[in-house]
Image 1 (cartoon, rainbow, N blue to C red):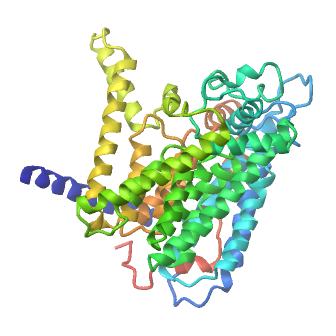
Image 2: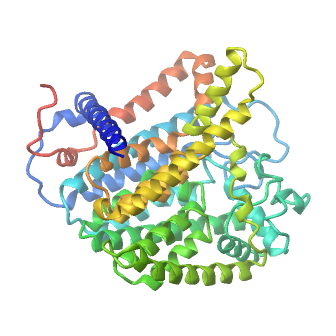
Image 3: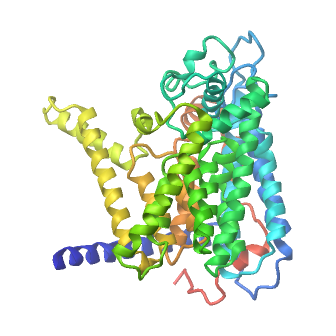
Length: 537
């Protein structure tokens, strides 16, 4: 055990050195090559400047909306009758306009870069100076979210799968057994990604119940159902904002900062509202449940976390932490048995209720690994599996398939994630159990078979209200890099830069580069500590 502790300490020291140098390098580059270097940190005045990042962020989101609204934009599904504008006309023929395609790509990437910059600077200001008005921040959220509310579903087609599964639910076809193709030739099926058209749903009964209800309310109109699912995720972001602020207040932290790091997070706005992923709804229930748990309202905490688990399975991790810490850090294992059993009984009632409402049993449990069919280099465990398999083939060991090496590495990742969870559960009193829960949720994503940007929302919205030390840096890093994981349009952008005429290339580079260096105002000086060490030294 002493040897293991020694190895763990050595690994931690290496991590601290690497993370410190990496963070310092980023700060040096930002200070030298962006307009931040023009300002010297001065005394903080007041929060009257908040209208400036609000307007800049709105402009960035509007650029993304404009880039996604072009016909044949690579950031959305280009199929007739899937949105109110920007879709190809019925029977359209011919080659898409090269200029429109280029500007769609440039506007989206330019808007993303500008959005990341303004949010990053605002987050740093909030870290150094507490007390911002939550009311003003809610207005900022409304302003930033409006373009995404109007935009077609971007960066993912999953919302069309949700709509089809809701249609199945409303007609009593079990999404746990059948795929959307079972609906036949109707508008709900055409937009579904071919990868999932015959795949059963891994979502919990609570989400399927809501999904089917939306289909009934919209009277089985495909486009109206998609709009209903988008509005559902708007509600989810509101829940995230309320829950994160509540949690921060309960932990004696600044609720405004937690709000900016969660509800105003670009990853949340782009993947929860823009793509309408149900991960936002799960995260909303989960962060509210954790906030109630910290306030010792355990019944509500367990019910809300159980609802999160009834949307997507990772919500059950929150239940484990709530049940284990019910009596506090000093409770013995024997004393914890009763609250664990009580939590289990409440969870069983909640899951049973939603299972009865949905009407399809517990078939979703066996479908939890259905997304494991996706192979992506963005998932570390899958990437190691593919690299190992290809390396073995390169040295002549062709008897071992890439599929088997991927399975081994994914199993190791799952075991590692579970191991970390157990260790953090047992040592929660040292780190704080809320911080530990946030880390576990992030680790389950990073060590899982598939890493999607919207999966990171699970842990980041809780980390927003509970982080300590360098966790703040990694929260920012994952939030500003996450939206670019598997972002559509990247390959198309490179192809266009190679084959387009020089004038278009020049325009594209100027617009995108401009978003990286355009001045955002003197308010950004307050994102640097007044007594900061001179980075040029």
